[in-house]
Each structure stands twice: as structure tokens, then as C-alpha cells.
Image 1 (cartoon, rainbow, N blue to C red):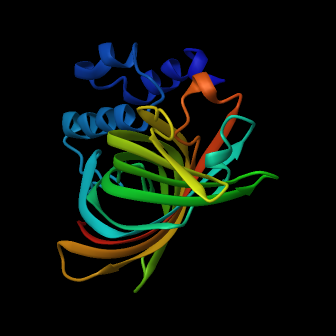
Image 2 (cartoon, rainbow, N blue to C red):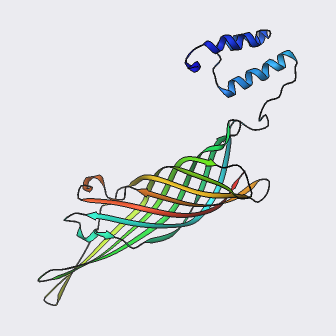
Image 3 (cartoon, helix red, strand yellow):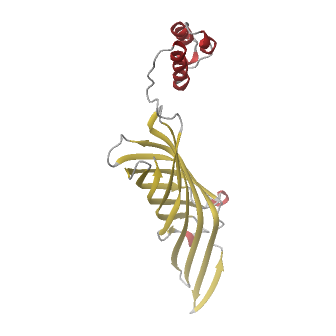
Length: 266
């Protein structure tokens, strides 16, 4: 309630009124830790009195930069309606290396537990599916391959527990995946009366981006006074690769399980 009124101004003004240098600032003061801390530090200097500022040696803003790598295990699934039978079912699991960088932004003067966390992660995924349909007069075989070159940009909030030998943390947020390149190939074989007719087409027009949610947990260990190493397990689910124009007939999703290891600054 006080943040929306000026009641605090009168109280603060009474406490520091004997320092003329900061009286004008008090009239516009906000109930903000950083603003109030600076005001009291200036008041102590004005009066020539020693002061103790909690967390004085800690910065207001700090950036932690890291390099990460690991393994991405991905599952592509389509819930196909008529017209997309060649995409029906679960594709084979794709396993691929992942590399990237991370950034944490926090304010140690306010909290060393909570930070804004973001990544830039590069990976490639390759999915394969085979379907077989038997009709009364023919057999249809479908071979589908989908390849994606991706840049993932997950952002979110991280909470780090109090420091110990292995310090745990967890994080969660939203993710955006940009397709740097994509390709889908569909080979269809129709066999009738011992004659095989083969056709090759694009399996699906792939959209440019994916959006989703992610969450993970991990541990941090100190290696020296400048660097930490970390291990994290992360899960992500996105809205898949089917463009909006066909989602009514082709619902898709992609699930990613990631094992990330890396090193970062303190």
C-alpha cells in the first residue's frame, strides 16, 4: 500500500532532515532497496558518521556466462487425420549432440538465489518413420525422413539453493526454436499384382519456428575461485513442426530430453 502513497516520504524526511544536501531527493524517494540504500549511504557521509551497508561488497547487477554441451534425445509425434497417413505414429527417437552458451543475470544485493536464465543452443535432429498399410488389392509402404538444423533459445527463471559442495538448482520457462534449415522426404511404394510403383515427394511443409515450455534441475560444483562446472537434466515440449495451415488435420508435438554439462563463471 505504501508504494502507491507518499506516506513514507514524511517518515524518511524526519529521519534525515538534518542533512540539507539530500532533502530535495527525499521528496521524490521511492520504496526501492537500491534507492534507499544509496540515500542512507549519502546521509552517513553527509554527517561524517560510519555506516554499515548489508552486502556492500556485492554488485547490484551481475552476469554469469557459461559454455555448455551435451546430448539431445528427441521424439517427434504426429496425430494424423486422413490425408496424412504417411506421418502417423511415433518416429524413431533422434539422438544428437548439442552445444551452446548460457547467460544468467542476477542482482546479488537483492538475491543470490533467483536469476534470469537464458541459452543459445545449436543442434541437428533427424527423424525416421516407416508405415505399412495392407489393402485388399495392394500394399502401401511409406518411408519418411525429416531433418532439422535448429537454434534453440530457452529463457526462464532459475532458483539456486544455498551453497554447498554440490549446489542444486532448478529452472523453468518458455522456449523458441528457430529452424536454420529443414528438409522432409517421403518415399511411397504401392505394390499391386507384383508391380511396385514408387513415388517421392515432400513429406510435409515445415514451419520456421517452434514454441514450447521447458524445465530442468541440476547441480553446480566449484572448481576454483573463478569457475564452476554444472550438470543439468532438462525436458522441453514444443508445438511441433506442422504449419498452422494444416494443424487441423495434423496435430504434432516434439519432446526433447537434454543432458547438459558445462562450465561457467562465478
